[in-house]
Length: 524
Image 1 (cartoon, rainbow, N blue to C red):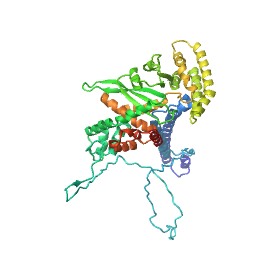
Image 2 (image 1 turned 90 degrees about the vertical axis):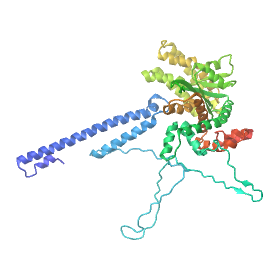
Image 3 (image 1 turned 30 degrees about the horizontal axis):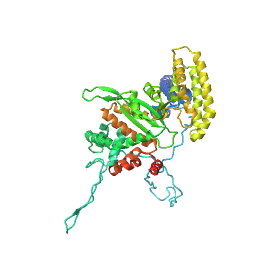
Image 4 (image 1 turned 180 degrees about the horizontal axis):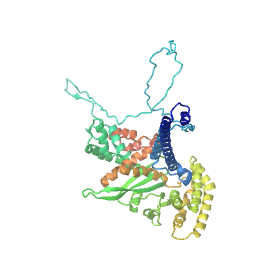
């Protein structure tokens, strides 16, 4: 359709035709300008979308990294927002260009264990709207939507009738069972919610106070703080028992992360450290993580925690651990972390696109490919696979590292990355001579990472005691998660049982999977 060409077919005088032509041309110019603006906006959004996709997938496609993106949820939300903006513009831009269909991944079925609330939507009439005949049911169209209720507060009302004997005037009533907090108004479920919200979801107590207030429930911060303190003391025996079980293993991961501690009275802060010790996933038995809060990074804290423990300890290159591996100690055998060695080359490649670093990354990737292949093997088969595949790769890698180092100038970033691997080589290759030692320290870093991220919410610990209490509770909740348990449900059950539970059976309360609890019973 050409509006200006059609004007010639109209019976208009020259002056009127000129005016109409000017108006139509102005409208066309205005429409073209609007379309151009929208096209430019689509181009900008498309470029932004490409950038976000590079952020989302760049590590997998370009940098050979297997580490998760800590901001992935923000990137995914931004991608969805850009798609939505483009779709809004497409509605107003009239174009004949065909749109390519968007590829969507199939939606995962909703879990079977969730309760279903059925809503039946029957037609307003059982008669056909066209001919008036009676309708016959031929099937059903069923769709499901996932929903959630915010924290729902309710009251347990315990009624204990009192009965009296007319003969001897004895009064009988069901006794009040012992509780974690005697005569307290909080049921175990509420206490578990407070603890998991604070230490697992990293919500400060004032936010829990606000959540309760929105439901017209008064929970003062002082009351919440009192509950937290009392529960921390009650759970202390479980933490000590978990530490005992952890030290029965012959291989441990260790790492530490800084936290800020408030110095009461003067408003200043100091740096403290949360030390983490993790069991070896390649060993049989339950998975355990134990956190230890200390006011410094001194290696003496690690020695105090481990005491007379003997075995393989997998750590980074922090000097605080060195005393554990000295000839005088004769207790721990050092395992070095391939993820840390790899990180040196990764940073170098990211900084200047070093071809040497890229080749190192590819060679190290071969080691991880072998580990992925052995993931579901038992210890004997894994040791055999490592002997056949990992050791030859390591020998070639060592020769390449030495030759490359001789050709590299001293003092630069390349030399430092090469020296890191070469100086720690005996500790780096030790895992490959067995079928039960881990290749890197990622398990303990994964356990400590949620706490490190959560620091953005709680900023600092209020005191050394508060830090120690947090470490104890994080130990229990973290171990529950490692063993596939719902931490809140587990804690609810424990807080109900603990007041009357015999100390001789404390192992049965630990956050292990049921099969591990059963094995502990058999050993007793």
